[in-house]
Image (cartoon, rainbow, N blue to C red; front, side, top):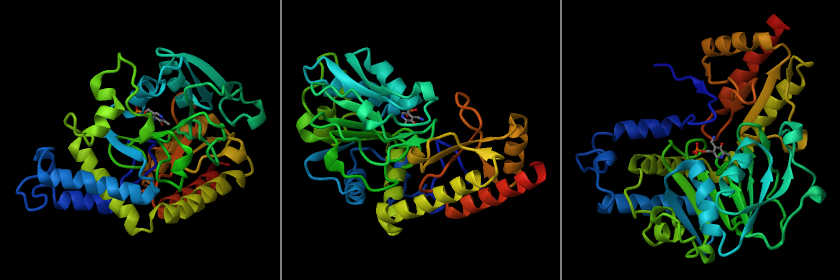
Length: 361
Ligand code: PMP
């Protein structure tokens, strides 16, 4: 069997150790004579798994006690709707910062529930930067301020949480949760679809300060009400048990490797190596993202000649470097360097890119 280095933006690569453990206990989990997929979510063993995975996530992210952690379904797009449903709290307007395709999509969905304040919009730059702080129009009366900490498609990442005064801060961290430390206290709510940096598709993590709960719009479907989920330990309806189990294994894997602080160092080194290769290629490879806001997770780049794109992708594949083609809306290439993508994968990619340039440059 040969595993490739998988640069997919999501669903994305998972740690080999986690997959091997899941494989080893697939038929008989916890001496139960059945797989975790075949257990009731009401079984004591599953409740223990749920509690343990939450505690591990709390340890990893240093989540304060006044925040609830929810393990829900519906992905990032589900949160685009659940955030306004739960966070408007009798207010009529919410602020949205548009720095890429995903934050723009979140705003589009929120329009169904409230009036939007567009704080700033970098579309005219093709979402290659984050507008200067002094050009933002933050409404102090907005119900919340929503932004995407890392734009998966456009490769733009906030270096720090934005400063928005007293307006509750809501962050889409679908593609960078657990990639580096965050001060959770700065946020009212953080959400992430698991399928990038956490685990398999099907699970969505929401971290929400508890005083925001219990004020959902009357139209909110019961399963989309954060308070109902919190009060039921995210077991109100049947959760995606296998995705939850695998994510729990990923949390343990990360803890064993020194946690978020340690992985952040490795992630920074991985991203630096690849950006260096691009920037030092004499224009053979280019990255149009503003250097101050370049993502450490999703690195987008172009070849100097678009007609080489297909050849690049095919030859990369022959070198066990998979899923490098950029999103169709952005074009070019994209290398996603999530936690589970080993540094050796970046080294192999850089070596391949240098060789490809030598032959085709
Ligand atoms: N937000 C971000 C930053 C994303 O990258 C994605 C998916 N790529 C989404 C939201 C939407 O997530 P989902 O497909 O889970 O609905």
